[in-house]
Length: 376
Image 1 (cartoon, rainbow, N blue to C red):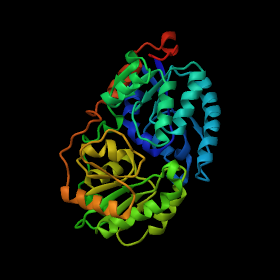
Image 2 (cartoon, rainbow, N blue to C red; image 1 turned 180 degrees about the vertical axis):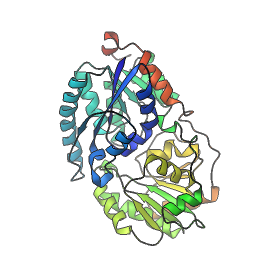
Image 3 (cartoon, one colour; image 1 turned 180 degrees about the horizontal axis):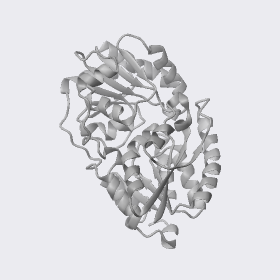
Image 4 (cartoon, rainbow, N blue to C red; image 1 turned 120 degrees about the vertical axis):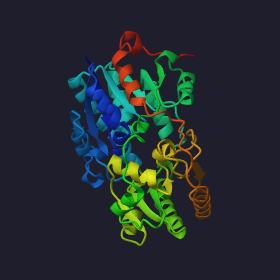
């Protein structure tokens, strides 16, 4: 039986990976453990490590790191803390593979620890572009990884052009799509009632995270987004941001808006509640990867604001705008006029989890895999 260790730092990555992790947990040839760190351990962000335990997943360790002040320096220092802590946990666990998703610092720290312990690294969502600090971090993780579970053929081809061995690059689709449209969701009226919204009026789901390079303007951007939505007559269901540089400003804007007419703010929504809100929203706005990847499966119109998801593959439901009053107003009007799109998603068919599990259980994890060289 192969031992797999997954590293999770946010509600977002765990929500995307939950169904896949449950498949790994129940696989007869795999034994799964999870290292929880970052926002998972903070009450201010919902203490979402509780959701990991409630799912029946074994926690290998909890690795706390400071989240304040929310600056780039804090993020950088936390990398060192996590590399040291993950090394200790992985030395104790001795997994056959470390599984990572995406482009966050905790994933980079996990890759650095694992490769120095001679443990194969499997990376999900590599090969994608975004144009902010996320992109070089994502590519760095890919170059430290031995197995690649790409969400799209374009991403897989890019990994090969980056010098990764084509035999170790597999197109699995995005795990966040698994089970997305299979579950029975509450209807729109029930979703609106749960959040204190008027079911007779349209609403927007707002998920806006700061970008490191534009942390200084994040608060003003969030304020303009809120104003543009209410000016358009929309009710707003807004989620608090991740603990990245600039998040204090966005958090302050949303805290100030709490209780204002037509604005509801939530610290955290469990995955089923978030999916239901995304499925029924008349508009999704912000810069979350959920708008780029998952919302298309429901045909939900998405207004993507700013550079955070720059250059990522788009579905037909996404419109990109800058965070200016004029661009936001025009974009909101355009998407509301167009309405919902037919569900169609370039990021996969909702069967990523079984593919990832089967690959982790079957691919050779030998010395040849660990001896990485560029393919060019």
